[in-house]
Image 1 (spheres, rainbow, N blue to C red):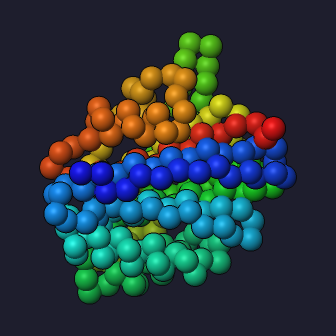
Image 2: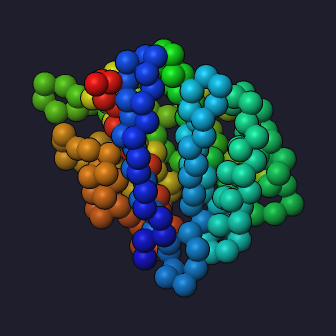
Length: 213
């Protein structure tokens, strides 16, 4: 069953870019909440996108993801501190994987990092279709039990880029196989239709980068 579906538009203004985003998620069981979740927060320097995947499935996994995302609501824009705060909040309970993407609204640069199995890529248009311009480095671990730090990376966005974040309920490397050109909504729907694992919760958050009109 569809656990969540949403989307919207964000005008970054200062860097000449705008964003169209879409999210789609499915729960493993129709009578249970999904353990995968997301949030989008406005910070002083721009935006923070987060995808959390609570360990396992069902209510306990959903609660872990919700705790993670609620903790991020107090973010001060320091990514290492955000991960540490989520790790501390989840200790003694169900753990979670987490990916964070911070976007600087003045420069159009993103900084992102992941602990656990949340995959991310930036797809860039080429004459022949699209290519993977940047891939998120995933550090092994589970927030709440095993946290060995993060390996943040940065890259500069350009109009036409497509950012894809997926939980482990989606087959690996799926973003490389989606049709082009694809809008954020179409890409999220195609990813979940073609690459969702039916035995796990799944979520895709897709961000389409456009030139500001």
